Length: 149
Image 1: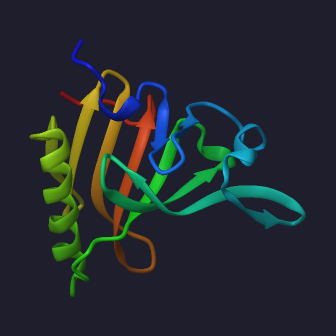
Image 2: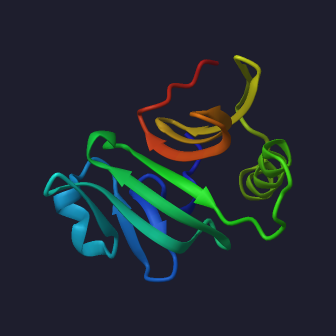
């Protein structure tokens, strides 16, 4: 098996602090790793990290959800503010191509493009998604997204 980059076999490495957000830990278990809690009815349901650096120089905001063990949702802060979702997708894809090379999967789902890089169960997934409006969705997961190839 090819080596897994950026310590992704352990979790998501926050390069500024050197901390690794581990896979399959509850929010309670990772709450002391710097994320800001988002309470919902008196109980924390999500943690956020703002302006963290991952993958050498990609600045992102990170979201971990109580129901989402094994996946971190990322919002990249691209240097060039794109004037469309498609342009933002292409900007982020170009960055990921420089980090990981060609994706293992590319395609479209309901007219929305996606690209996925796999190392065993580890997946970096980039897509355009829709929830009230189109947006770029970037995630890193362990065992959540399966390699269809």
